[in-house]
Image (cartoon, rainbow, N blue to C red; front, side, top):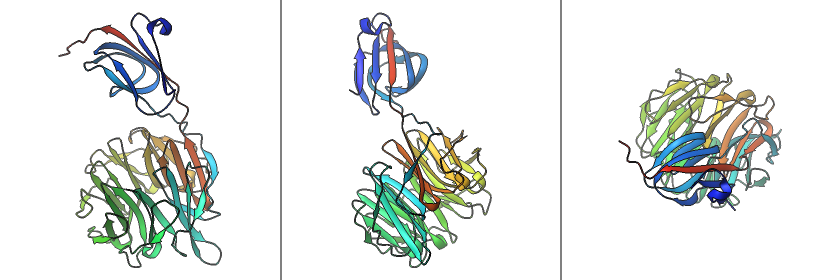
Length: 380
């Protein structure tokens, strides 16, 4: 059972109290009358849209309480090594969608470049797939609207409806490398060498757009109605439609590579050279943050209220808000981490020599009490 409730006599917390024990993530439905409640919990939980953690105290609920949503908790210093089925090749891109993780990469097998693509339903057990890339590396992967898209060297691109069967596509990049791809609001956006940028509504037909850049675009993301890309020259640009792009002041020094960008909980986060992190609540105004690491950060993701950034020499740093960051033990020893993603309560990080680690959310054991103190109070 995801949630258990106890009447006042069992709860032992005073007359008329409501007591809950929650053991699963997700929104739990309750039906409490409007009023002023003394609210307490042993872990973070959202009660009718209000964040509660510990002895929160008095909260007025003028419309009553209909929903409880426990927060996912992670031990972000406890990562488990996994076999990604990559051999010794680099993992350069990770994504999650429709219950499936996809990892893409490649490298030199001793005689030629090779592409590697593997999939997993849980981040633990991985299966190699035929990517339709031939000998060219895969640099990035994304998912949206029932389609997985992989992009890479010399303009190579392939798509799949299930992560198993992949079909080569014409990307519009010619022989230019594609470094990243994202999806949002019904549109894929792919970015790469020489400022090349293309968009597609379905992953099959791609249209070239003007990025107003001539240098390499390294990363791209979507969030809250805005596409954001970053470059090797420390630049950031944004777009509301994927077609028209506006340059922004990133906070990075000119010439500093911005390797990754992500969005979550109302914040855009860009990471790059020398451990530099810049954040923005709107994609327009960016502020530098202290990352807690000194090596280049190569990727960043967001999941369950947590940003995770990864980089060179096994560096990893996390943040609940994009502002305050804490260095973590990644489980990579001293090797480079190139990519990170999140899905279904699991973070997955991948990098050099096919190394991979995962971090799953902890079991939910949230205890919550709401003791009414008076009928509804109309606050000024």
